[in-house]
Length: 328
Image (cartoon, rainbow, N blue to C red; front, side, top):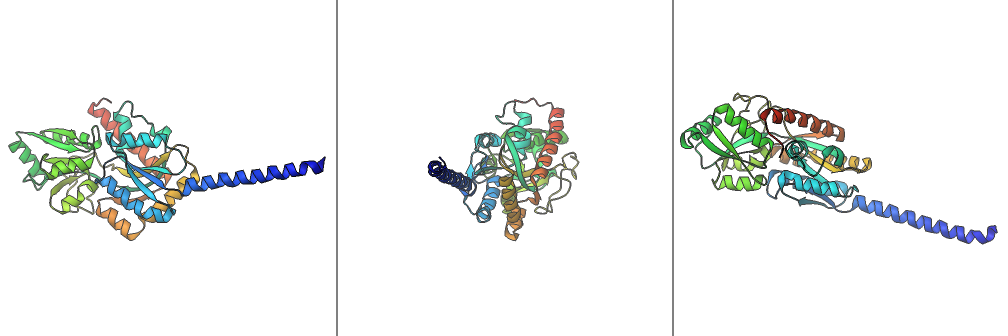
């Protein structure tokens, strides 16, 4: 009886070993195959440039191709919905800033995702500030010049571009107008790239966006950044005053850049990716490049990024509620 069952037992053992090898091979392939890094804004903008800078180096750290995939629209909402439905196998990540993760759920009734339920924090790598810039078609060289120009040439009215509707930049436009007693109206775009195109073409006279969106054209003299948020002046723009210096305080809590994965992604995958990003942002050339874009490079663990996102969302929930804005 025992003799007749040995061949069967051996056959089952061989099949089990083969199945195990197949499953392990599939897992290894999922973890080492091409990785998609989603970006919720069009090519050519600041977020896209940051993603491509990191992706170029991450491929060496992870041993696989890292592809930046732009899913632009609705302030990153489309990309976030793509992430929600992605398999939690370590092949899809989402690089974004505060707007999509912290702000959209506060201003859109049904964004199609819940960050706390659908995503997991992977790694934070930088903070940044928003800024007000004027186009080359205006004579303004400072914030006071811009306000004076709006009062005189615009009869007290002006349009200011913002990268997305119901975003932090849009709320800033309203508050700046209140501060200086001028009628500023936000003009929402689908990302910073088309907004910058209109600013460069002098089709809109000013814009509020992140420093990475403005920095290259500011250095080239094509637009002029006249004020920045944050508690201190920025290293990339040491001559530009903060809004607090100009009398508009209360916006010292600065935004962040982070990378997120679908809920259910394993801790091993998250830690591996976070470690790779930590190594990349420590590289002198990458650190210099990101700093030149106007970022303050700073590693945040998954737990630190989650805490940072939660605190930032709470701050802006109070500001948005006080503004009277109703979720759309």
